[in-house]
Structure formats: C-alpha cells, structure tokens
Image 1 (cartoon, rainbow, N blue to C red):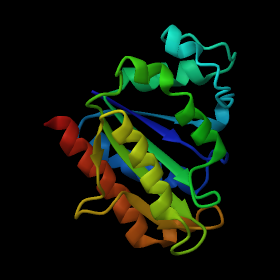
Image 2 (image 1 turned 90 degrees about the vertical axis):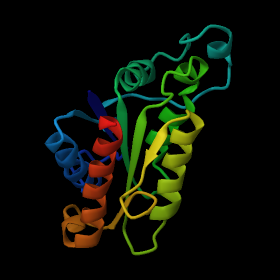
Image 3 (image 1 turned 45 degrees about the horizontal axis):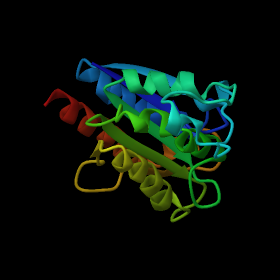
Image 4 (image 1 turned 120 degrees about the vertical axis):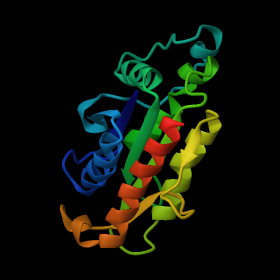
Length: 189
C-alpha cells in the first residue's frame, strides 16, 4: 500500500512540506509507504483545451511532466495533497495539474483512492477552508474517499507566514497529523 504526497507549493521546504511531513509520519506508523514529491520539481503547464485527451486517453500534445506525475498518482492507493493559500485557493502550479487530470479521469483511475487535503495560509481565516474545499472537490470529482482531519473537519488547516511558522500552530499541526491518521484508517479498511 502506498500514498503519494504532493507538495503543491512552489517552495520546496516551506510550511506546506512541514504539514505533509507530519501527516506522512502518521501514515507510515500504520505501515503504509509514503512517497513525497514537490510540484516545484516539475514542469506542468496549463491545459490548452485542445481536447485531444478526450479522443485518445492519455494522449496530450503538451510536452511537460504532467503525464508522468499523473501516472504516479494513478499508481498510488492514496493521495495526500497540500497547498499554501494563493489568492484564496490552491497555487497555480497545483491547479494546472488538476486541470490536466482529464487523462486519468477518462478511465476512472483515481476511483476509490483515499485523499487527504492540507492547507496553510499566512493568516487565520486566510483562505485555508477554500483551499481545502478545492482539493476535496478534486478528490470527489474522481469518486475518491475524502479523509477528514478527524472529528469532522474539512482537512488539515494551519497558519504560518514565514518558513517554519506553521510549527507554532499546534492545533493546525495536530489537524495535519489527524488527516494522516484518518487516511491510514481508511486505507487499512
């Protein structure tokens, strides 16, 4: 069993990664493998709307890394996706990946996978819920099971502006760990 954790931030080692690491630690405690990648390491361009992938699955004329990342996502049993809040939602880099996901959507490749969402904003009430909702909507579009942060919260939300600030948000980091525990529970069922 394997979870692919995706850091949707253009900053590789920032607050989003700290939240992902906290959730991943809980998943690993359950004996589940976690592979973590950073979207900053990939060239993922926006969808150009050509609809070629509708005509021939997995056929995209855009020569970038989107197909490779989406295939890694298809191979995983669970997806842990984290994003900082950018203008009230996920980063442009993560949104580009989401928009390019027509390729696995066509063949229902994410169906029944478990998804966990994490978000960090620079201020309390800084768009974290909207960002979590955007990630969870992505999961639901693919007929995935969404892992809450335990106790019915949307996902793991925290506050932190400068790198490392998220560690000061004890409740937010606990919610990130809760997403990891919930994902592990759902994957083990």
